[in-house]
Amino acid sequence: MSSDPWGRVDETGTVYVRTADGEQVVGSWQAGSPEEALAYFERKYEGLVVEIGLLEKRVKTTDLSAKDAMTAIVHLRTQVDEHHVVGDLEALRTRLDKLVATVEARREERKAAKAKQADEARTAKEALVAEAEELAASEQWRSAGERLRALVDTWKGLPRLDRKADDELWHRFSHARSAFSKRRKAHFAALDAQREDARKAKEKLVAEAEALSGSTDWGPTAARYRDLMAEWKAVGRAQRESEDELWGRFRGAQDVFFQARSEVFAERDAEQQVNLTHKEELAAEAEKLLPVTDLKAARAAFRSINERWEAIGHVPRDARPKIEGRMHAVERAIQEAEEAEWRRTNPEARARAAGLTGQLQAAVDKLQEQVDKARAAGNDAKADKLSKELEGRKALLDQALKGLEEFGG
Image (cartoon, rainbow, N blue to C red; front, side, top):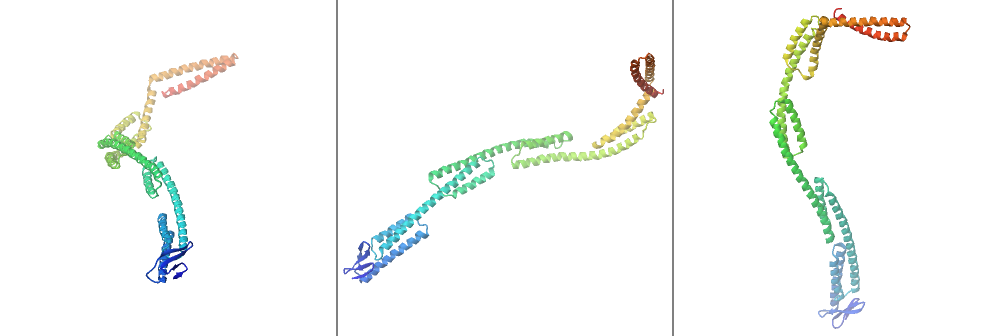
């Protein structure tokens, strides 16, 4: 019979292992010595030790699932409980019990981590849904659309929740995106319709602008072009391609008209500048007629100058008031000389002036006599009143005498 601290072999070749519950039969050995039998079953024990060690390492260093770990532990425990090895089986059971505790702790840690991850994912997805619902009402079509696409990518990177919660949040998220897309589509459809209306309206404006480009009715046509430009701005923009093409035609028509007008006005300005020079010469010639000494000669000379003036034509608008003012001044001086001559030679007017002077002189003499009588009678109040009336009549008499002098006495 052969034995060691953990097992023995009896005379019949039966191998035993010592446990806390007593000896347990391991197996039978007939092929060799008892020492070889013990060594064989001890090697089987060492194999279990190695397997348990490898499982401990996998549990600690890999992401082995709790289910797979427990399956492996049960398999190893079954081998230990079947006691087909020789060695410290209680030590193996103790290690397996500790490993179960480790796996259970790891299971709880993972469960807690998974719950925390789920809570974080729910919070993150709720935030994405809230932002998407806010963006659904936005009119910043480009930036809001880009942000919604970014939110989808973020959503895809988050872990799934339980099916019901995940589906409910996704439904809200998807609804917000759909609502935004629907509003954006309606907006751009309306914008396209507006731009199409703008295109049609601008085509009519372009047609009128092109029809006017050859006009020589400068003032009214230029005014109409200004109106067309105001209408163009009020219409709004067409699609970019149409807008650019129509604007090019519209501006081209205007340029044709205003270029032609500029050329005509440039010629007209040059001609009017020459006219101004001639009229300045005539104005200087007319001014030499002053002061009027020979009315008849001055009148004839001014008439000749004026005829030549009228034949010259227009001058620049800004120079017109000054040059015409010089001629008007000479004309007024001649008219005043004519009026003075008429008053001086008009017998009827002279007779009326002489008659008025005589009447005023008689009235003055009569009032003077009345004043003197009132003073002599001691009636000073009446005398003062009559004296004031007398002063007024004397003033009128002085004016009448001056007027009579203009007729030569």
